[in-house]
Image: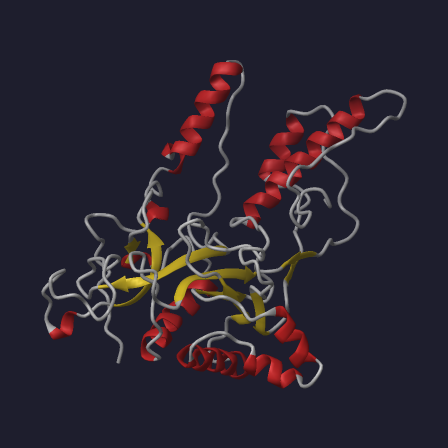
Length: 349
């Protein structure tokens, strides 16, 4: 059985995402924004729209590291532990933990596994996944030594299906592309089996997760990906780039499930945010979108973590552009340029 890690916060630090939960408007981003606009537009009333305090985060990237049963961190240690580093009893060996980092550090907070901010499907999967990884003896990544196989987990929620697109970020180089092409001409089954550059323990985890999907045991798996991202002192990103190696390699593999999540934004006829924007604009509300626009989210593309709140932001943008169009003469239309458009979440609407 897996050793449970206490939920007691480490050194008084709990879930970082809950630091300002009692008063969200006191967070630095809001305070700085108010100062910025007040200095430049004193007559402007800067209003902050608050949404649900729980279950709003549909995107999460979490670290996988070792921690001791008492909740203290083992980020500088790698099993087997050096005796001179710390004297511990047999039952105090560190265990694999999933969680967030302490702000401005790479120190894992074990108690942050099940965050209230997470969508319920993320927390439902994480509690089972951590147990599975421990039971199958997956080696967590170690910051100091660079050893260990599993570095991060990336989770994206499919809101309509209430399922999770899961990515395992491993500390290994991907298979060579020419090897992948060679096998693909022979047997697709061989490709899946032979070109995974992961440990036997990780292969077993992948097989178990696929059974979860088929048997609906977890109830939340949409798809599974492997992302090969070997540790490097030159890169501190969770996701790596395809061109980090001079030799072409495959850095992403879809193990099972659809290759992407397809989301549709839902624009209510009149939301509080939209009404507020309309009252401040002579142009009124923008006309409704006549059809649903599919947004295709692969695991390696940017997606807003709070997509429900972002939908309201898009509503305000549409209303503002509509107001500009009303102000123009000779039936001219405003030209809009979207920078860093991603999958087109703003521009396509």
